[in-house]
Length: 390
Length: 239
Ligand SMILES: Nc1nc2c(ncn2[C@@H]2O[C@H](COP(=O)(O)OP(=O)(O)OP(=O)(O)O)[C@@H](O)[C@H]2O)c(=O)[nH]1
Ligand SMILES: [Mg+2]
Image (cartoon, each protein chain N blue to C red):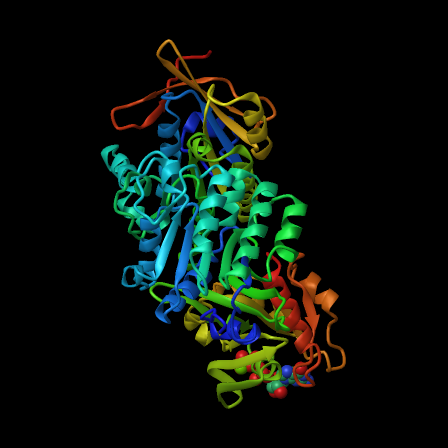
């Protein structure tokens, strides 16, 4: 019986879950709340009658219980099924009443003997290591990896499924390589999107040696209570009146609706795109100035923006730039859509870039929304810019 | 371009108006020399200027931190939606560890992963939800963190966060006790920072100096902390 990861999309892409004896590593970019995935798997496992061992390496078991509680997950209800290996309390001089206690949490041999003890006392269970990186910080990279190799081997013998969290600080290349490709049966990468601040988080399977995992990347949010929620990013399409926003949204979207009257948008355009495993919701704004007051409401929570301009009408470019400010999307990843390139005499992108005095990080992409050329390229470019912080 | 005022007029003047966004500053001084008060004044000036502020506190609980401000005539009540504390203390004392909107607890000063998550989440909220583009981060202190984990781990942590300060055009302050750490530790830290606020105490007088942000270090300024914990530069002294 495989242990479900408890996130349908991950279970799907990993053959239903983690088979007994296999190990899974969450390789987490610093700052991203990636340990909730493992917590969710663990809790779901408990609910379904599995036993579990939680190795707490950087917090006391009581703190861990409190953290689970934030998500609505009461570990107390499963006291009989869950044991802690407390590899923290003695380090900060706290007492511990847990079944397994490490006396010397900065001594890898001490951790090792307690973990082995706990692993051998349980089978068909979930073993969860709170933070591999904190053990490394304390005990050394090479020393820790040597022991983890042993722990995963033992888990295999006892049919335990093991889950490790690892914060990917700048460890040595050798360590990172081993962690990502050698030590574990499967690796899921959890990262953040954004350069100035991390405004989105994603995950994707990097490796799973028991199946052919899908290469998709998913965005997610952490909700309390609740846990991990897969999240569809919002992309805004704005620009001056008649620039071709509605046409662009429809050209890009797998499905779309617009609220138009007499050929102009009076509410908004809404589309949804699925492209190469990444989905996004697309929202188009009206362009007429009489709608300016509502623009700021539409821009909220966008992760990127397409600024559509009519390549024939340079007198609207100033208005176009204003609209970035009006939608409060100024500073987000942005692509300028030089639309209507099919019309003879359309200004080339390079000229638009100069006329609009755009900064280097805002590319201008030639597009004909009418003929659907350049549309997908622009989307890929924006997603790429959104993801550049990876 | 100077994006951030310290709120200490003489020193802001000496720096040509303040400090550029993207700067990471080491705050170095012997224990009890007034580093915390200086930094809290600087943080408060930011809040009062409608900038965001995040304090990673390894020595005082979040509640104690807030109380310090209100007892000091620097009430932060009006700025709570711009203020975030990462409390690394409460859990180690066995106190209540429930989070509040502006106090997020981590298990202890060595839990760099959670400290990092909380800093990141605060930055994200201030930037995305509140639309605030300026933020001050203060880590108080690296010296305590060093008692719980090793230099390399802290270096890796700082490597990430000093870079984020740079790209976000924020400013960061990192407090270190002078005369406590070995030379190698100090060298390692110094690589990460653009400047130093140096604090000294001599025969009961307190002095500060800024190094690295102007072509020459500034002169030493004598300062005093009044009953309201407000920092004042003493004018007469040209040391
Ligand atoms: N030749 C050409 N015409 C286009 C293109 N894109 C849009 N149009 C035409 O431009 C006009 C305006 O297009 P819309 O998509 O409604 O423009 P909009 O920006 O949504 O307009 P508002 O919502 O009123 O601001 C329509 O007549 C479209 O057929 C294009 O790529 N080439
Ligand atoms: Mg329209």
